[in-house]
Length: 95
Image (spheres, rainbow, N blue to C red):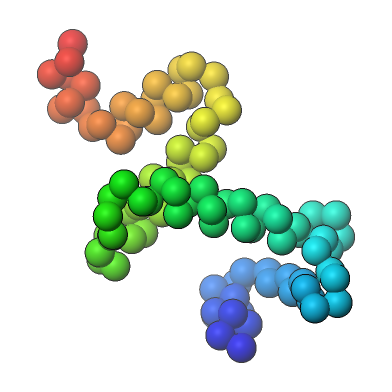
C-alpha cells in the first residue's frame, strides 16, 4: 500500500510484478533482476562509508546515480563527472 500511495503522490508510474506466480518480467521492460542488481551495486558502493546519516542519504544516492550514468561514458564525460564531485576549488589546487 505504501508504494501505491507514494507513487500516486509523486506522479510515478508503479508496475507490480507477482513473484509468487513466477512473474519476473513485465512488458519486456520491467525486470526484477535489474532492480536487484542495482540494489546490490548500491549496497556495495555504500559499504565503505560505514553508514550514512538520513540527512545526507539523498546526496549519496544522487552521487551513486551519476556514477552509474557516467561509468560507460567517454573519457570527457567521466572527467566532467569527477570534477563536478571534486569541486572547482580542488580542481584549481591540482593545476
